Length: 152
Image 1: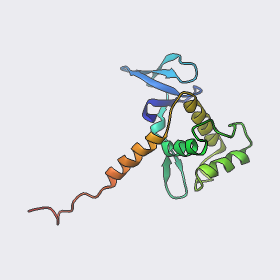
Image 2 (image 1 turned 90 degrees about the vertical axis):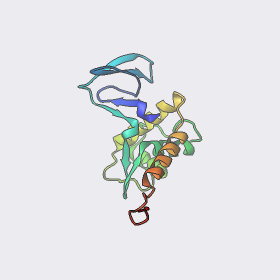
Image 3 (image 1 turned 90 degrees about the horizontal axis):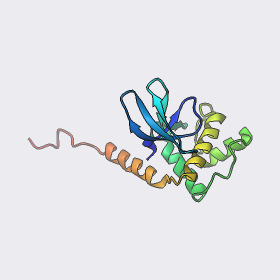
Image 4 (image 1 turned 180 degrees about the vertical axis):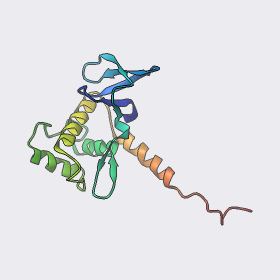
């Protein structure tokens, strides 16, 4: 689901992928439902490709959104994205305790909260998304049989 939700540099909000064309994609704004072309020169990022830094590794955005959804019982975020930076960091530490405090900026947390609220308002749920990614990771990490155990 998050693969079809896009962030476009220079344009506020999030967009749903509607159609592909030769040198552009057609997107629909999640906030006002208007459709527009986004050209190859525009910087577009799929939410499914975004991860946030932690002390050990990176955590996919879908897992973070799922954690926020569980914390908020499926409702809006309990903190406003315009809150003080200290409050934003405290809230985010409850969601992702081991996030990298040097590489995750206040603006990243604000954007995450805005995105979460926009997606929740549009009826998206992240529980299934996180489970799908988890099962894909498990399948990917299963060991292949070694050459010693293969029949000769």
